[in-house]
Length: 536
Image (cartoon, rainbow, N blue to C red; front, side):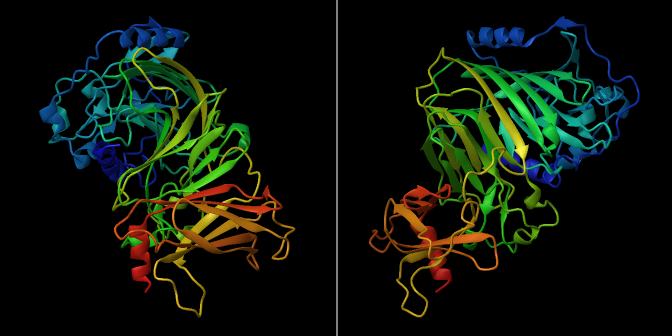
């Protein structure tokens, strides 16, 4: 990742995050006939894939940019004044179909995006026109003379007029999830994220939108960048099987123009500033601030992995080998308002997003990218699938997966799950505390542990890449439906200034049988020193 992600979050944080896209002017569903469309042309997903394949055989041509001098002057305030006209809303008068409204370009979103409406195998373009928007006098947007497209689009609920999905910027999109609250984003593709070389951000340059009578919508998208092209089909449905949330079936045909150092498939992008495991690093008054608090992985061998997110002292890229992975996601497990105390953006309502491959993706790893941040306006977390085989020019990928924007993972848990991880001074109360020793305290749901107590032989299976572990214990917390696991990690033997991470692996067992998912926790000595110093 590069600061481009952070810049995007800065804008979206002020424009969109406070309840999703609701800070843009709320428009009622239109009742007029809608916008004028261009001449019909044959369209299908197969035709789109051939277009992407053909483009991959040619040199990349950046899209023509609109009037840069004008866009520079369309600030957040000016952008927020611009309203899409009610009577130009696409599909506003067609029963349960989700109406669509384009976004106006501006300082943060300059690349033009072309939009097409698809019906009965025919596509007709919705061309950019200033007359589609209500622009106040004095707004520099009225001076825009040249652009080949919009900034993106949003999909609204026909009954409430509220947004429930939007595509805006590069290959990003968001949905309102299970609660109506926008949070983390997904992307079409990630190229060299978290590497020393600059990250390349592919862009959706064209969309073909096809509605259904049920109110669902399918977005077909052409992806272009200097080293890749792609054809995407994203079918979105709400409240599948009566379960609140949004489920998307994604098909992607990818074609590489150039070699890729780190190919990121089905990438997720989120924000983690601080939580229970590192509240000491932030000066904020709230207990926790994050869109997601952990990475969940379902391995092909049946193991479930939980990796609490970090705000590390430097950029970190961690890979979790998982051939034939069954799923992974950035999750928000903490659902109590009391743990956030934010009555503006309601982090406890942010959706978890889980990726489930259709078929076997083969050898590879789930890659987690974590950037250091000092505020909540920056996207600093990325997670995606990385194939083991090198991604070379000329390669093609045919991928299918499901995205679930729900309160929790779509698959039921198979054992106790970690729900909170806290750090404090190690050692035994009433005795001198070791100078460089932290106590890791983990709370778990008691699924599968209900019949056990302190005498049942439940143990903490722990290993550490560095340092020495001791004082392990596991027990049910009286008066709750939780268990607690505790372990001390002594890092006094590490050289002064050594800030290589300490990787912990924790699982509850009884007679060698796993009773919980596996917790993977990464600790940094510099942050541990800060914690112990603050509590000295």
